[in-house]
Image (tube, rainbow, N blue to C red; front, side, top):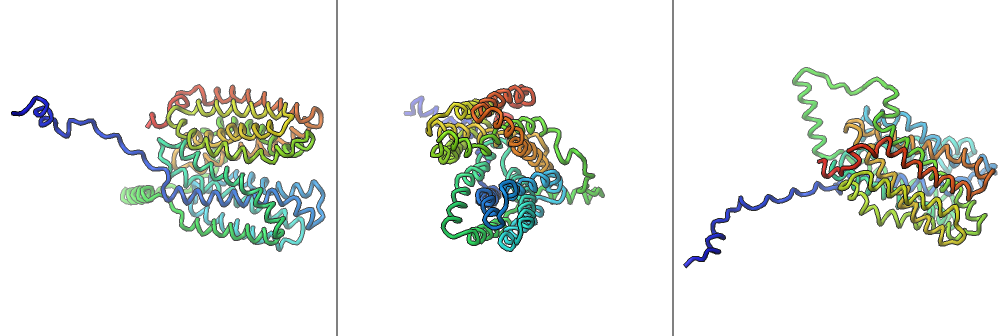
Length: 431
């Protein structure tokens, strides 16, 4: 005899069950992983050299403090100038083509550090290296961003930002270790070898297969319709700074100015206050805090929206700057480093996710270069204005003022992006 339960079980059809949830689109694809590795190598080379170049100029060419400083910062000058056109050329000429040429130029520039026989030649090599780095980083980021699913944009951008984080933690210490143990020539050889590895990995890096197929189909359809696809547009101011990215870029310009006060004056500040040990662990704490939280904050931004992550980053950055203003023990500086990682280290990838989502796929290069250009302007101009402030009022007043400026940046963010509905709704929900 069949029980009612048995009858119910027999009459239940498979199609009556709830439909399974769609699987998440993967982030860690071969394209993304290779782009991550290429980015990491570029940042690693940058941080190895930036910590050793000024002293090398002094020892090799008896350069003055100002000249040795320019030997180091010429890299940033070259990168900033190149960013004016890097996005446009990446979008027009093709991401992979620009990336490979730029990676080759980076390797050639690294090969010329030892033969550079004068300070002027060294500065020229640094500027060329910086320009090639700008093109390579813009193209590589555009390829990586094209491989990230739209519903997981912030999560994938956060993982991409870990390349910078790890390079920040490893590069400076590795540069000093190589100089102290094997000397400058061996360090330059190691840098050249690393750059060549980056070029070889770049040769393996291609757009995702589905994108190549879609572009081929679109080109074939255009040919059949007798339409020539326009690949070379006239250059305009929109190709230097994409209008959709300028608002969030201006926000990052202010944040970059605040961050300039940290990276430029931390060492002198720590020596004046007797906090050298704390300053030595500042960027270690920065990297650890950002590394841990990147696995959480990107997913949170995709699920809950941009605002929750950006405002959290602003609060942490304001606290970090305020703590530096009042620090009188080493652990204060270490905690400030961790808060800076949660602050600036959170704001940069969050802003990049916002910028990338604001531009169409074929203008990823321009969108990324616009954001990086404005952030670099803040970091580059910051020391000029802050140096005057330090001379007049001291480091404590400077960091206190920067804390206030970072707090005011929250108002700017709300005005340019935070009040919009797209900032309040996660990308996963939008998709």
